[in-house]
Image (cartoon, rainbow, N blue to C red; front, side, top):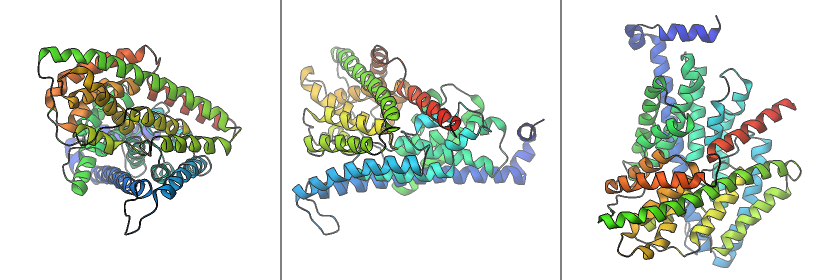
Length: 455
């Protein structure tokens, strides 16, 4: 019998008295709790980094004061472009030379880690202290460089690292080491990033694990609860996009679901397919042009930023919030610029997620389409477009609906969004063969195995 099997048998065979009162059980529980709290703290730090970057870009691009200083907008625009070029190059270079394994949003990498055995050396290239530290550092560089990225993917990856590393300090059963701790960490990361505990648990099952495992359910729920509670201590029990109450006021208004969901879902699928193809091309080309390609991607991000007046920079959370709250009207080109910035950022492979940018693109699509649908609440159109575009990109329809409900408390939009997500899912399948995270996980795992074989 292997050492892992012995631990499995010993832990599984514990009587309830031992499970509650033995030093080993208390140690195991304490380690898990500390790791989940650390995951919530990391998600909170990402929140602070994102917020401070918004103030930093307002200082550069709009001449707003920062620590009592101001800068001319023309100089600020030039500096922002320089940061985009230099920041993408720096993040990609550090990723490849110092923090290999940190590339990508973090969700495909977490999924890939579930495809190898716990004892496989490849896991150390996916889940480790080095990966967790590198993810935090490189995400901060990318955000301040103006990359169009969210923070949920790195939150998932860091959470998976932290909870998986619990196994080095406590005696966990083999099923927990193989999958349970990783799923719990990923769920905790996504839940803490958006203050969406239910969506975090569902996403871990629907997308990261791609199956329901009853044994892992308690770990997932406990990890989510602790990480979200840690964030509540820092931020309070906030609603991500603010409390909203839009609705489709009459049966006739429900007919808007079909065109909005079909178009947004199809465009989301097209974006997904383009990112997968672009990632493969970048990975192949980077082997020959390790300097020119990062500089070229950074230049592309800078050009999009210049053309959009800086609107393409950043996660897009502020713009989506303003659209849903009726505080601002985005230019017609905004959703194209934001999607273009997100595309460049994602194919570069720097750490950063796509949730926030996708929701921002969807919100702007809905606002642009709202005048076509008469007296339908524009916020309802934006929410339908958000859930549809996001579903089209990631093909996780249940998560898409639940996370938007938790981020807005718009209960009357539940059924319309469920219908929209189903339509968007089918529209996405017309253009994208595989879901984006599954395809990117395959690319990542293939590259990792190829690199290991050449050592």
